[in-house]
Image (cartoon, helix red, strand yellow):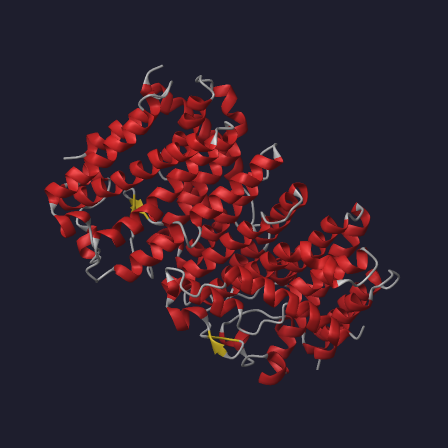
Length: 295
Length: 295
């Protein structure tokens, strides 16, 4: 199967499941449902759910879209949590971003109050849909994995350190800490949930989590680099945002060349961790996709 | 056992469990953990967890504090969710309350960004601690009950309708809708989780949920009344807030006398629903406590 086809078919499967969970039509209060729907269907690339599917299909040793049915609640939960974090990060009192993927951000369109509550509602909904997982043990493992990824040791902690660190010169370790949690944590949750569904052994789970972590770190460094030298087209948003927000970046701390080398090293590590596994094509493609963004 | 002793002993049990979950000392990022801790330990009356304990102890037919050990994760989750909702409700872009229980509100002390993320972290932590419940089926039932209570059909929906309705003259039905969700939903979750742990039959669960719902509605009407005619001491905050926020209240819509009558009717209903049950003394005391607040 062509990689493009893989992304397209799995993406469509997810869209349908997300629509099922978030369709609202006449649900009251309409504005809240509208805000949730708006943000979830605003053109996200669905990388986390697709990484989750791909890891699971690698583990079970075949690509079979029908087998993904039982993964859909967890896949939707991943995307809802990701969206909730973007809504809250964009808020005026946090990153103050009025645009997201070329569209008005949630608070810009619905007001800050609704945006805060839409984020809360998406976190809540994510946890609720996990109870649709038929196997109780796996359902609870997913609650555990996703709450850890979101927690003060994960995304939320990373976001707070990011805020505290703005307008300060931080060191590379702090920056790595922020990236690991803001981006790495949820990617890791994707591979770890796949391991839970695929009944993978602990060693394999650790390897795949490391793959995801390196992927996330590399992604963030590339993002930092593109924010400095990229264009609107490649980045999907106006470059220079980090400088405007006085945020530390890899290029600012260690220079452009060394940043590129660091990203390349992480992508190599990521690649090496899975290169000897069977059916690893989609996972390798994730590495290649990030590498292609490097200028 | 004296009622005061009951509240004190169960309250202390909960405090200890909450401290276990939220102690942070040197956890990084410290500011975030500090904000969570500050809000959870700011003098709340712990009504929801104590109602949860009392309902369970009524169901199992004896008051035995050792039997409550297995309920502690769910009890803490209840209180964390309640606290998270207060933190977010107080935010400048929502109710803009700079005080809560006579202390600076979370954003007033830690800034809006940290307050938003502390609320998110408490919702997340609540879900995480539910995975400590030993019985997988009950753990998932609690996830289901609490997410429904928080959802767009519950607390969050109620809060949005409350915001939309401000500065508008709404009718009593809308006000009832808001109260049912903002206050009733989480009290209902308390009795429903108790029924899950106590393995209660469906009919009994419905009766106890109705008891909790009437209790919540009465509580809110009494709060509305006290906001108009009460003092700082009885209310725990400056009265007149609803008028300042242009919020509709029962007294404003149907007058003070009719509001009192409505609250009394709901308290009577609440009382009647449990009056023939054994070991109902604490549940009856909840009704009496609200009645005593009526001026």
